[in-house]
Structures are given as structure tokens and as C-alpha cells.
Image (tube, rainbow, N blue to C red; front, side, top):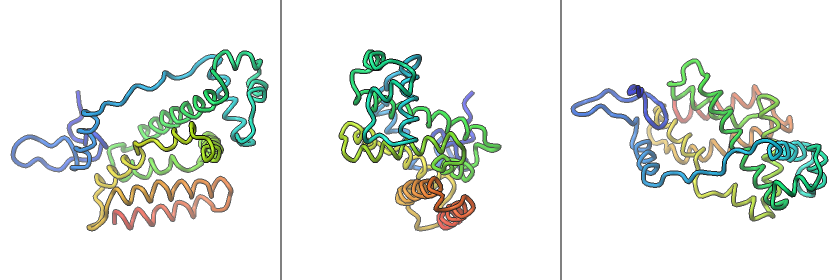
Length: 236
């Protein structure tokens, strides 16, 4: 049975019903997102990689985290994966296909794990708790997220001179910013706050703070204080 006590988009609380039908969205922003999703359903992406392809993809991640991707070769990836270069060439049409596939698979893995952690919250229906937990996913809080951030940073550096990788980063959709804006709206922002502009700033700012943690330029206590300051400014 569908839960009719929370928003169908951001899972935030619904306002009390007045006359007529009970609301199913917490705000016009969430209603608009649902409308866009119905009008333009997402195009199914490629299926998750498995077997030898997954083995090679994980080797790319390890190399990216340890030394970057600027000069990585198929031979080095094969050696890291414990296979021959011929096997890598059999499963991927070339180095570009391998790197793009590994980046897409990293995004997929990060999304799955983030959803699992957020679903395990004590009160997943609390929009403020959801907002904090979603922002936590940008921070290297454990080995898994630390490695993921290091790999994404290596990819981002290479994408500055690689159009195929840049296309993955520069997609027209902004799902993270849209989600943060919807959660701000559901949590009840202060008067005059624009959730979309604040979402842009939070995503970029917390990503930068995550990189500072990765470099040990800041500590986690200081980063959490900075995030709490901005959430108090936005939400009160």
C-alpha cells in the first residue's frame, strides 16, 4: 500500500488536507518534478557490469585512486585486474569505452549505496534528517566513500581534456541539485530563501569540503559545523 502521509517525490511530510482531495506532494516544486518525470520518462541505461567486466572496472578504480588516470594504459589496467590485455580488449571496444563504462558504473554504485544508507535512517520521513544524510554522501566518511571521492576527482581532472568523459559529468539533468532543492522545500526554508540557488551552493560547497577532508586540510568537526551553519541559515 502506498504511504499517503509523505510526499511522493522527496518523502517529506504533507500539509494538512483542506477541502477536496488530500495532497500527495509537499510543494509545487515536487509536483513539477513528478510532472516532468511523467512527461519525459528516463531512458534506461546500460545494465550493471558483472563478471570479468566488473573485475576490470574495479581495477580502473584502484588505479584512479592511487595514481590518477592521466597516463593509465590498457596494459596497466590488465595487470591490476590480473588478466591479459587481450581479455580487456575483448570486453571493451577500447580504452575510452573502458574509462566511460567504469565512470558510469561508479555513479551507479555510489547511488545504490547512498540510497541504502539513507533508507537505514531512524526517521527517513524527516526532511531535515534526509537533507543532512544526503549531504553526508559528498563527504569521505569511510573507506568506501573516501576511495569513491578520490576516483571521481581523478576522473574529473581527466574530463577537462577528454570530451567523452566530460559528457558524463556535464549531463543536462541535475538530479543531486534537484533532490537537495526538494528537501529544502519540504523542510521549510526561511522566508526569502530560494531552494534551487541554495541547492546549487550546497552541492558545490559540500563537494569542496569533502575534497578538503580528503587532503586533511580540514577536520570532520569543522566541516560539520560549516554545514550546520548553512542549514541553520537556510532552514532556521
